Amino acid sequence: MSSPDRLPKASGTMTRRQLLGAIGAGMVPLPLNMAAQSDEAGPSTPSGVLLEPFVDPLPVPRLLLPVVANASSQHYRVTLSEFHQKLHRDLPPTTLWGFEGAMPGPTIVAERNRRVQVEWINKLPVRHRLATDHNIAGAGKGVPEVRTVIHLHGGHVASSSDGYPDDWITPGRHQTTIYPNRQPGASLWYHDHAMGITRLNAMMGLAGFYILRDATEQKLRLPSGEYDIPLVLQDRIFDPRGQLVYPVGPMTDAPWVPEFFGTQVLVNGRVWPYLEVEPRRYRFRFLNASNTRTYNLSLVPQQEIVQIGTDGGLLSAPVGRRQLLIVPGERIDVVVNFYGREGHRLVLVNDAPAPYPLGGGGPVPRWVIQFRVRRPLLRYPDRSEIPTKLMESSQLREDTAVKTRRHILQEMMRPGEIFQQILLNGKRFDDPITEDPLNGTTEIWEFVNPTMDAHPIHLHAVHFQLLDRRRFDMRRYRTNSEVVFTGSAMPGGPEERGWKDTIMCPPLQVTRIITPFHGEPGRFVWHCHMLEHEDNEMMRPYVLRG
Ligand code: C2O
Ligand code: CU
Image (cartoon, rainbow, N blue to C red; front, side):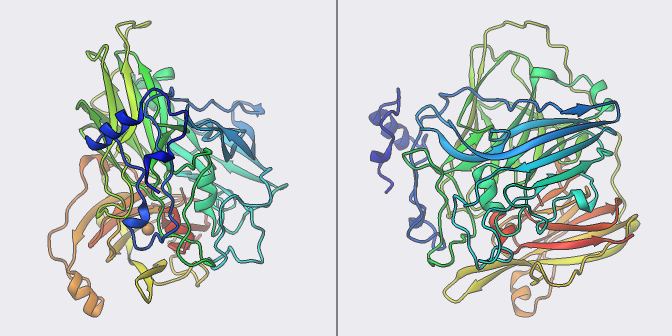
């Protein structure tokens, strides 16, 4: 199965011999047979084809035009449908789902305090392309197979516009959402959130950028216009006909798998693309929209990456970084200066183990994107800069919190060490609501992670700050569920000091966040953003009490 004979015939300029040489030199990720590595994955896990990197230019999603716009609001209409799109030079077009005929969908550019209304029109087919697991909550045999509901990740919105997982619509129906945009400029994104099948809908392609602009940010002379480029990372597996492969579990009537790791990385819907850049500063907005994969990104040859923003907007000050760790759902805004690199090629590589952080459960594609720095051309001189101060912001004090809630992240196993479910506090999605913060108050939430996976925990409708992470004694925890700390509290790095909506909770640590709950009262969700976990049922409702 992992034989390079499965290369598509038209594999282009890199010969099989060259490829094998590259594999030997550790440069090419093998189309690994994941079944050989992972007990959970089961014998039917496919390996997919091997593709040549850096042969396609990076596409930049087009900007969506409003159907009606005035000074205070913009109205968009977006159709969800099935289509075929070429994802690599050597692949036949892939059957995908997306928005306005594109994967990722077109970018919605919003402005702070200017309302956006979106009408989402579901024209998807009535049969799903990927195997539904009917044992999963909300995806039973009695509900329509294809359902979708769109959520604006990172948006401070009313419950009725948040895309509650049960508020799905079937093909032929519309969903209308209102986004007030009363929050700082940030790189947000929209994606499917349908109960029990989000992992499958996202795999088919239902995601796009929503860039919220803000006048204070525009006064800073950060790279803008064509030098401000969103980059969405998604990993996939392809069969030789270019179609998506999504593994199924070992039990025929229960296809759910606890994780998905692809063999290729797509950036803006292209496998391992390249981007021609000028020798100047660029702003890149990274989004990890992969189902399960965490990336640890760096440039080869080494080059500093300056992080300027995170989920909720700009950091208070730029942070120089060599590596960017980005978990599913998270965004990292950076500036890279290619000045002085004229004529060179830089490759953005990934070395995060899969699953993160322990590894041993899936392939680790090394490449992400190649930057080709053109000879001096400078159509315009680079007048951009990275100010030393980006945004006014302060750290919330712990004593402003009125309540502390402790949450346990739990993997439930079947006999024989087969994953059954991953839960929050041992509760299923439909169990009575236990989280009910009062609107206008601040709370501390602690995530105790006794599992071996780092889980990216996401809260809807708010942004929060990381307080700290702290190791605890696993043996004591196993014996009597007692959390006994074994080390001192570790604050996050400066790059984690901004406003977050998705936070990495490492194994055997307690991760603490502080959240001001300010919004419109209503029902929202919080969950793990590894979509296989979210679907089965690492997701809980919460109520913002008025
Ligand atoms: Cu990005 Cu609840 O999701
Ligand atoms: Cu998880």
